[in-house]
Length: 183
Image 1 (cartoon, rainbow, N blue to C red):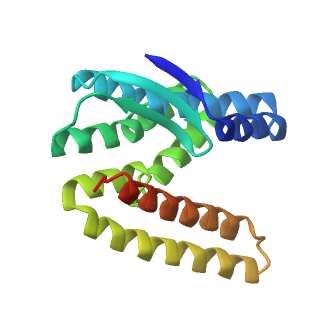
Image 2: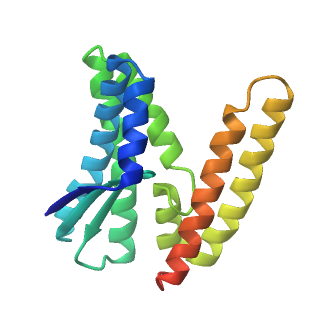
């Protein structure tokens, strides 16, 4: 299995390292690792040989050698959030409350039914690409509207910036998957 890090992954995690305290960074790293290990464990159980793991600017990309069934694709997509919930409970019991909270946020975010997220992958496998694209458009519009509304109320522009990033990332991955012939 090859391990790699893209330039975007280095910049993203390097920026987090600089912006967060050591405790916050390690708490986030533990939550993210638990989530991704859930995906890898499911792929191993489904006998999809993991060929490469690459840290990118938008998360971890796991390349595997076998095409999965519809049920296998759903299981692989939802195994990350399931492992995240398990880590949330375990971290809470171990007194690592910050990591538990970050794991819960990461899990709920990844369950959104948007194309590049785990919820979107599960939705696409269950209902097809057309339904997934409708959810992408509706949720991106709602997220941008909510972010801009919060900014107009003086709550800061963080929500709008996050929603904008998510919309651009969703659009980019939809265009890339069409270009690569992925449905």
